[in-house]
Length: 261
Image 1 (tube, helix red, strand yellow):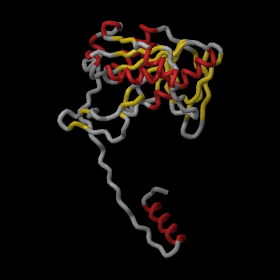
Image 2 (cartoon, rainbow, N blue to C red):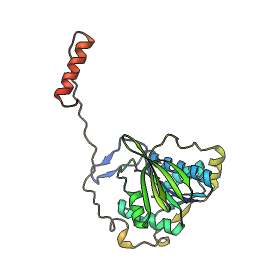
Image 3 (cartoon, rainbow, N blue to C red):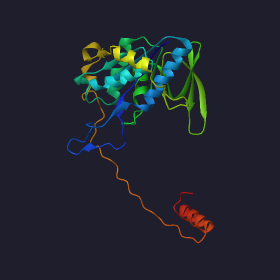
């Protein structure tokens, strides 16, 4: 089985700082990591390879420094890695990004399945995976926590707030992965040494079959007007009562009046 995993480099913090002049994220001095959901996608792909054989290719779209997370994926056990990078890709929204990544998949493929995290923690849109499926004309399955080979198909376990759903999906397909019970594996010393020696392929604009009008800012219908950090306000209410029982009844009454319960 030939698998492609899309990963993204994201800031390792929830305290994002914003440049008030440009309304863009300040990334200087902020440690970057592999998007956590994408790490679970890498793990799912490695488990599938162990079950049925094949190869795992990882790909990331971003600036040159994104090669660090590709090396991390190679250290986990991926077979090869590619960085999609070009200044002409700068400013791409999810539609343009998914279009570029779909073109990269066509160039590197064919693949039996493409895996990605359900969303990136810096954008939280959850759109790139499903949009790639649309560009490619493939089936898609979202919110997947487990994948199992099933002949020419894959059995996918989907997570819902109150239940799990098990479905079969025909290949090729795009799978969006959530955090599952099995955590991403740690890299080994041997894996890190191998990854550090391995060359990461580079795919720029000229290497991909894309149209200039569909990439970068020009090809992005989404326009960001302003970015800001939400203000948080906390109000403390003191619950009166002589005993624990009286305080509990007072608390329940306050929550009821606030329509919380």
